[in-house]
Length: 281
Length: 181
Image (cartoon, rainbow over all chains, first blue to last red; front, side, top):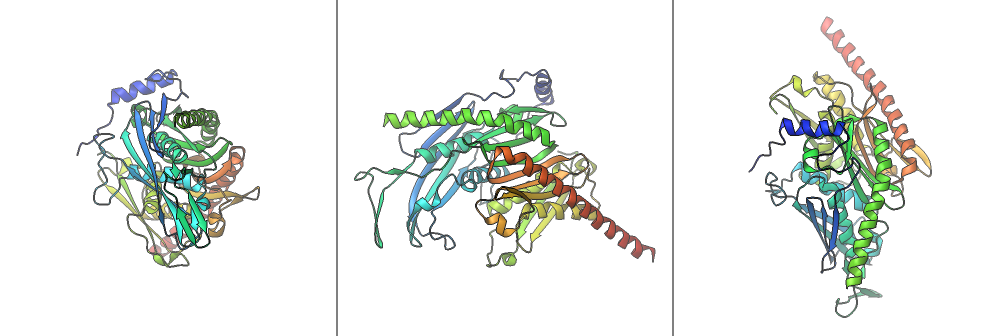
């Protein structure tokens, strides 16, 4: 097990001094994203997002199962994530069923972003009420930790879900026929909106310096972090500020305003990538 | 970190807390998430440098579930820490707020929380300077309405602060009476 001792005092002091002069160590503006590259795999439901040095892979699959007893007409969406030493040498793979706090935080956040905001229409996943429904499984693999795993993971998950095609189903009375993808073209999932995560890091002893999309160094030096999840209709799907230095409501409001414009940029990139891949098919 | 205390939070939900008996496994991600939120909230409020090389354990048990789980955990933990005499910079007061039919409402109960349409915002503040230690929201809310709901939740927190303060004073008076006899 490799222990991460974090950046040296000189490195963090340098980052802070530069920020006080409105300069970021990697040359970006305070509210600039790193280069975002989205690729949708040859298989439907496979997406890889690269945000600067951070790389996340998402894979969507589905199977027919029994519905949950308290929701017989809704399908299920399950998330699983793998944050192991593939991403960074100091991160241990969850061993013996014990998941690390960081993995819980990220996978729960992606789950909340997509499930609680009702991005996927779970009622459309129903085949036969009370008997058969689709269970959609989203697997997230963190390939590289370059800071801000949250935004990359959320983008990968939603792109993979929009890219995925499930087998077509015909229901005749009590019988459901699931068509082979070779017989009938598989259909896309019913997705209402595309939630996009925008993360901020606050540096300085009182968290007075805010930056968008922190790099690994900025994330390690941060005093607090804040994530807003927005969609194209200017609706906030989730807010998450947990831990670190307490922030004033004005800082939160200001970041939300900035996030509104930035989320549009990411949404556009996602739409472009999906359109590109569908024209290639 | 040898100059600070570490904070450890364990959150358990009793199987009889909901109307249908349901036993939750120890590794349930929802429970771990709430525990880690409480831990992170108090890391900003407890003066950990006063207790180097120590661990402060906070055990929370949910006995009855009717909405506002996270806010209640934080308020209960605040009182417990004050009662234990742990050094904190300020109380941590939490409250939820939401939107029902275009009206901002305070402190959602179980029915309101489980309804799909109601956004659920949980805020924890340090009342003296009004800074936000925790901010969580699930489900959709239009960005123009955020300020209203947040202001309402912060108002609610200040209300809770008064109640917590009264409870602490009452307990202290009680203890002082007992000690003086």
